Image 1 (tube, protein in one colour):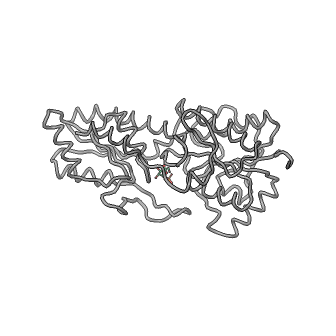
Image 2 (tube, protein in one colour):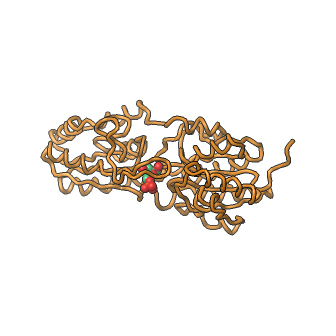
Image 3 (cartoon, protein in one colour):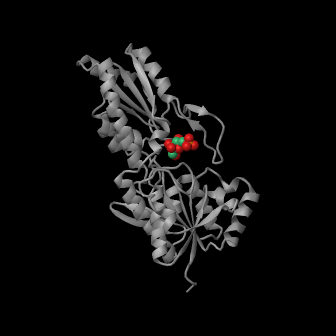
Length: 346
Ligand code: F6P
């Protein structure tokens, strides 16, 4: 039997999301209860490359449960972009005496975690993304909060749309998958929902709006995910520069769509881009509980030596699955769910 692990590193990488602090708090509190030391790593993989760390104790995590964002900070740093950075990261793991690492992140952060694990580092993953597009977990924390923010925005847009007899286009986040659009759209009573998984058919969108108008409804709400496209490979981008994981900055599809709808239907149209509002602020109860359960389970996996694994929600159980199974493919919107949403179009 190898000696028990006594010292672990903890980091958050990629885009922040509500629920990260509940995970951090749970990892630290569970570890302290087992006399396990936690080293906080600032700003994702960047902190491990630059040895920017601090010891975490109960005071580090007091009062953070309800706070959005991450007290550890985050970045989109990819250590595999530069062999020197990778070397620095590896030697810092040794120098800091980190016997294992808990990495909280989405497909990019977990992709790095997987590679490091394959090269011998003891890593546990915790899945995070408001997009909810990581495979092999029913939900990721952050998603529920984002959906509730988007739903509330749609509710608010209803009253102004109705007062002015306008079409409101709401652009929500969702790079590769339209989970936020579909959930918020169903919950908010959208008249049309457009997602990255299916090409946008402008004529069908306009026909749905016209059907509503023909039966006396003088306003409509169209929800569009930022990654939705008119044809494959034609995403609307704000900035074509790539981040370290090769992603462009999306945004603007709502605007293009709004103009087309106005042109084709003749109905006055306004566009709202929700953007990072969806990622900020306090997590919902669901995300706090899920984050807490994920954090506790991650420490249990360290103790059991289940490295290369990720915590996952399956039904109502928190289980462990290979990190590989979560990052090798995306979890896109369920066709059955989209069919339900479609019943209410137009
Ligand atoms: O992956 C989560 C996400 O919020 C996407 O929905 C969005 O495209 C992206 O992050 C935005 O990233 P940034 O914070 O770098 O603008």
